[in-house]
Amino acid sequence: MKKLNTLLIFILTLSAFGQEKLSLDECYSLVNKNYPLAKQNEMLARQNTLDKEVIKTGLLPKIDFDAQATYQSDVIELPISLPDLTIVPPNKDQYKATISVNQLIYGGGLIDATTKVKDATLKAQQKNIEVNLYQLKKNINQLYFSIILLQEKRALLDAKKAQLETKLKEVKAGIDFGVLLPTSDKVLEAELLKIAQQYTEIDQNKISLIKTLSSVIGQEISPNVLLENPTLTTSLDGEIKRPELDLFNLQKQQIEASELVASKKNAPKLMGFATGGYGNPGLNMLDNSFQTYYVVGLKLNWNIFDWKASKKEKKSLQINKEIIDNQQEIFKLNTNIELNQQLAEINKIAAFIESDKSIIELRKKILKSAASQLKNGVITSSAYITELTNLYEAENNLSTHKIELLLAKANYKTTKGN
Image 1 (spheres, rainbow, N blue to C red):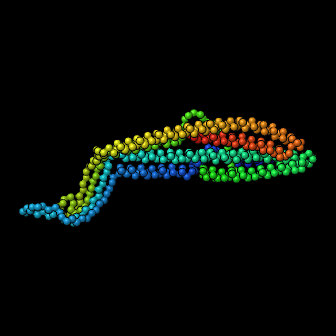
Image 2: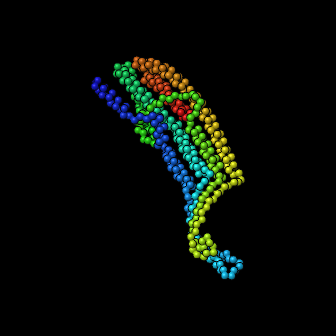
Image 3: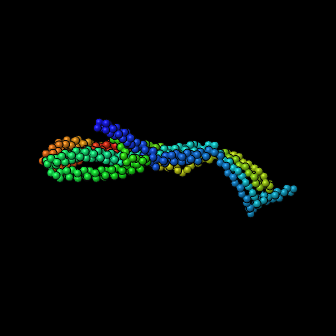
């Protein structure tokens, strides 16, 4: 017997070590890695790289090829004739092919400013993805602690079942000795069948919740997984560290980058250009023959008056910043209200737990007395089961409140951004 017990302990130990475990922090990490929305980070980075490459082509030479053939109804002719001098007018059919090269020499910093807007936009977009992923944490909290609650309920059922089985043996012995009524054991056996039904319900609910959690975190979870009870503390300092606050700041930086672009739009721009051509006529309009030619030069463009368009654009951007400041203020206000509500919930559940402990102690004493009375045939099995169920319900309430407290603390930390 001793060897058998040792072997059973060894097998149970191996089973415990081999059981799949999953923590709340691992769920958070997996959702950030596997949730489909997370893939957009890499997509946005690739798009940003392409957009900046397009913008930077503004620093490269622009090469254009043009070709045309025309016929015109009239051409330039001198209204006078000179002796011994014949000036042949240009042909009415004319041909021209040119290659033009334009090179930006100075653009007033517009290209660099536009590139910074793209970088600021990327940071804001990626932070927005982080915000959306962060908001999934409360869903994970609900699923995670719902599964833990089912684990605790199953453990309580195990204890209740073991106690009933022990009591059933005592009752059968009492029946055999004629101390108890012949049907006293049937009530206990019926209660054990009800426990079997409760096992089925708990297991099916757990499987459903695990499938949902698995879909959210993007990883298969075994139905026999053991979710670990996290150790959670609630810090009462007033600092909120949510990613939404970072998003507000990045959105304002994006607006500031756009303001810089607006200020650069009217800056002077210096271009160098060169055009090479082949046509009839060439630059000499009085030479009716095909000839090559070229033109080189510099061009300055400066929009010195834009009807205050840039100034109005900057004012519009400033209003956007004010809107974001207002949204940030509203977010902080609503978050603080939510934190206060959650803290009140935490305190309420903590008070329930203390009350539950007192109730359980009383229920244990009552059940102990009922067990003695059942053994001596003073009360029926039904009366004993009533007291056992009362104790089970009290223990179940305590277990539920403990898990609810963990859930409330997890939501508090999520709301706060820790």
